[in-house]
Length: 149
Ligand code: CUA
Image (tube, rainbow, N blue to C red; front, side, top):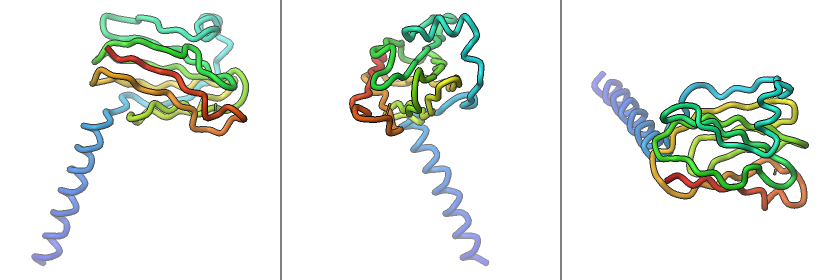
């Protein structure tokens, strides 16, 4: 009985410890990651045209990202540390992967579909958006930058 109890306690501690470590280092995606089929909405259509960062509140921003073979628009984004960022992600052609390195943010950019994820950067610095879905010859060059200041 002692050992069964001991093992359970260790499992719980390891689980909590691992969760704490991951959240501390990578941050937490707040809200749900979701996909919606409404890219025809005129307001969004315009925002997606070239990619855009829009201030939506005192400490919140919306980022409209569009992936095309083989670049992201916008390709450089400035956002403040600690602000809640909602990313709206779509593709103008084929499937692309939208991954922000060093964070849990990972969406698939799909034509005709808008993926949504909320994230707050807790540390200033440079973050790279990489395409993690093979999309052709210059897949590896499909990198954008987020500068958190
Ligand atoms: Cu875009 Cu790989």
